[in-house]
Length: 457
Image (cartoon, rainbow, N blue to C red):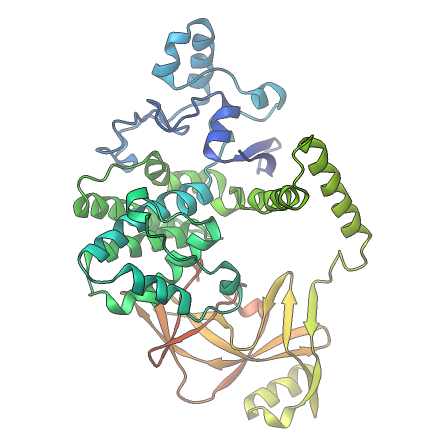
């Protein structure tokens, strides 16, 4: 169970608190029933578990929980415990009792990490991969071989997915942690998409799931993009139940249908996920493995953690500068195209040489040559450039980029990139549609890039 309280400043003078927690942790703190098999598994509405198979949230069939109604139900349940099953409420919330601007209704945002990355995605991937195997479109051996041999780059090397276990079909899930499943659903079209017939409905379920995840982890939204996400969620649900009519929807499928409403309430959901708690928890798990000491664990863990924090704070390199460069050397401007030389002369009065770096980190985001960055738009879709060199001039970072043409490949949910002539242009970090660079993958003689999250241009 992970939980932590965050403060959010609204336009009003009040301060609203949000409790970031996994599903069971949120329900435990909120005074709601904690099991996924209870009659009312949702903390956002009064949907019954038996109804989520037939009714959509978008239809308005489920009554949303309200603060006044919840307070009344808590009072009634405290007087009559038989009402717990009817309301899905066991009692009051300890946070509501101690925080002036916190309430159970609205105080517990969803957790996309457990809902999607470790919830719906491994379950549906197991379902769809098993169907593809049974129809002999792929084999488990060839899929695992393709996963192992895929040329992962940059951050994808760290998060590369594990092979699919032989027992995945009987277990009903492929397992894996959040980062591995995120990488797998994102890169699967490039791993096996070329071998799947176009418009295959089982494959389309996975592609829609990829679309939903991309948008759920986005940093920015508009009303149009929220409507688009709502349409994708509805389309995914309909297709899933059409292709697999006997598949029983989990409560987490229902939670996802609330996402557009919840994004309007909380903002981008990646700001309230439990991923950082998982990252911190990893340290504590490693301490237990290394010490192999299970006596008084609650003392061992905080002592080791505070020693580590003391070491970090005392280290001169703990507070890093905004811009960090590696392997800086001089480069002749005469090696650059005329347009680049002209830009450097006019903007920085550069004549003969500039400093170039093998890599640069800007506010913790690392850029290397050959990475793909999104700059500009084409027909409403993001356009891309490839970093050729990284220049550092008077504490300014400039990317010397190869200009690319791109096409969106629907079947792969990826962009095909092409560069016919070595045309270079200067790109400033402020020009980027999104600060996060992407790796390009050369497959079957063509170059592709696939998004990690939806880019709002």
